[in-house]
Image (cartoon, rainbow, N blue to C red; front, top):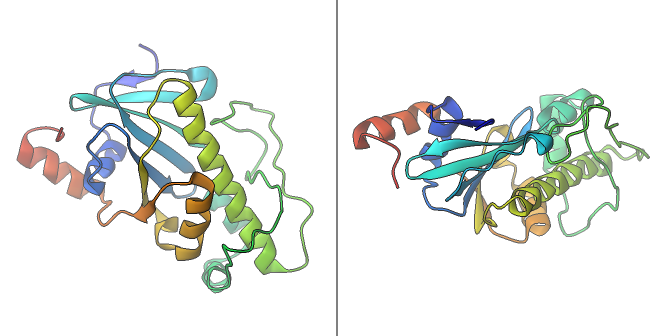
Length: 207
C-alpha cells in the first residue's frame, strides 16, 4: 500500500523511546517542521493529505508532517531571542492573531497544497505578541492535524507526548494544551538510540 512501510526508522524508534505503545498514544515532534504521529489499529494511507503509516509492532503508526514549525520561528528570531521571548508568553491571554506560519509557500499536511501561502500578517510592533502569535498558529495546525487523522480513521489522541527542540518550552506547552484540549507533556526520553535499545532488548516494538 502506498505510504506504508514495515521498516523501523529513526522516527519510529524515537516514538518507542517516549513510551508511547498503546492505540491512541500520540507523539508530536516540534523541530524545524511539525510532525504528528499516533498509534492506531489500522494502516491509513492518504497521500492527498500527506498521511502515511508505518508498522508498529502489532499496531500502526499513522502520521503526517507539516512544513510549519521551528524553521518559521528562526526566520524572525535567533535562539537568544526565542529564549527571552518564551519567558514572556502569556497563554491565558491569546493574541487574536490568525497566522498560518510557513517558511515559504507550500504545505503538505494537514492541508496538501503546494501553492498555500504563509499567513503572517498583520505583524504587531510588539515582538512578544508576534512570537506568541506564531506559536499559537503552529498549535492550531497541530490540532487540525490530529483532527485530519481522525477524519481519515485514526483514533483521537488521549494525550500528546512531545519531542524535539520545542518540547521543553513551558509556555508553548500551555498554548498547545488549550488548542488540543488534552494533556500535553514533554517526553522523558526521545532519542532514537534509546528506542532502538528497547526494541533490541525486547526483540521487537513493545505492544
